[in-house]
Length: 259
Image 1 (cartoon, rainbow, N blue to C red):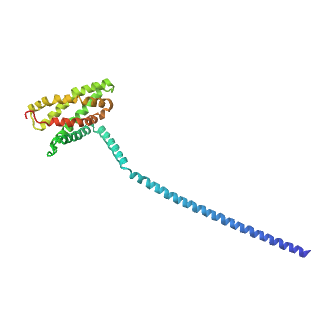
Image 2 (image 1 turned 90 degrees about the vertical axis):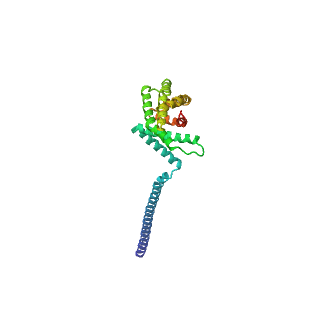
Image 3 (image 1 turned 120 degrees about the vertical axis):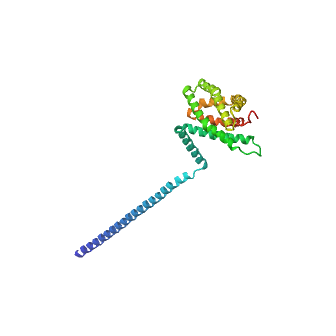
């Protein structure tokens, strides 16, 4: 009995030691697994952060770069918008000089166009004539337009049809004769004509010019007074003047009556 009891104890101790070893080994493998799993997570997180940083940096640098490499049409559109904003600001801060310069540019372009239409292959551009036209617009027309359209805006502020027609009539039969007379006189004086010659030129050219103007200006004036804000009316009027000035500069530079 004693020997059997000892054998049983020995077997039991062996079995318990085996169990302890198995549990220990399992715990080691589990800890190794957990450690390995945590290392994988850390590595994965680092790699994701690195890739995200690369993506964000790429996005950050490429997005403005794509804006800088904009198409020519978008660049020209931004340029036009910037110029318009600058011009409107100039109209607010320096209205008379801005309108005068705008009129001078339009008159100069119209005179060059008029010369190109009428010149022969052997002729060349008359720069002095173009400077006379631009000088008239710069010195006289820009200020006259500013004063006239502001005056119309104060006297007849409404934009209904009746008020617009009143402005149209006043423009064609009051403002028109005065400004055209100033134009012919200014241009003739710069060409060296005396008072009698200027009077003869006005007698010859003013009435036909006003008559022809009645076929062009009423519609232009109606649109200007009806649709356009007062501070932009001189610019629109000068723009309409481009085609009219081609004709007007041709008439203004005809030979003297005595010739």
